[in-house]
Image (tube, rainbow, N blue to C red; front, side, top):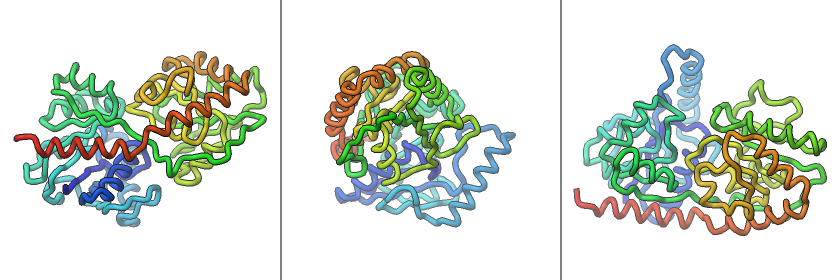
Length: 358
């Protein structure tokens, strides 16, 4: 197959990393894979009066020109090509063309059939990242839908009356995320992804940590993210955009991974943390209930309840043996969720789409 992925930008995020994981593995399976992105990042519904946002995008545009097609945060083994826009004049003909975020779906929907079978790879209900009416419209397009989680599949069927989408759950890169010598810290280190998006629940996570710290004063909050914000507590240790081996070492250096999101399409970081033998305390969003066994491989609570997160943190901080048991059980369980298995399902879905009668 000749497979074409369309990205909205090249910024560091889980959804783009998922595309890169698939692209590399589909290439190994003998397919020709191309990735295209617009040199000027697509608009996710930001108002034009948001001057700060557009200055940021202009900077990205010139950064893209400077870097060419080099990705410095992921080892991509297929061509990643910057183009003036995602208009079809810049897109070659192929067997499959895949939208990977809601703004890209508008382009794919307008393409001539020669560009390939039109697929919409849905990784979240993206109303959290755009104007609801514009986002919802994309789910009504006549595109073959491929979703990453069962809750997204149900949403497409029940809310948008779509025929059953293809479901392909994400995997974890066990070649990148592992821990061959787990060491538990005396003063426990609690790791959390810090994001400026409110729905990532960073404030809830910080509150949960502070509640747990009233009983265990020696614990350490360790944060990582793509932006260092003024609201990050002064007592926290912060790592700016760690990738590759740096990210693996960060997971391995910590005892508990805290995941306080209000909503997720899937949630890759808890999988990575489990693969590195971090005990996971998380909210039951996205794919969490698919790749964990609550109470056995991770401790799970409802979103927007920092007190419940704190209670789960304390249950691990109070009981060293329980912490170690959750860590080991999580590690043993997550090993079955590989990108190789996911790629087999992704490839099978594309083959079935191509084989369908028009």
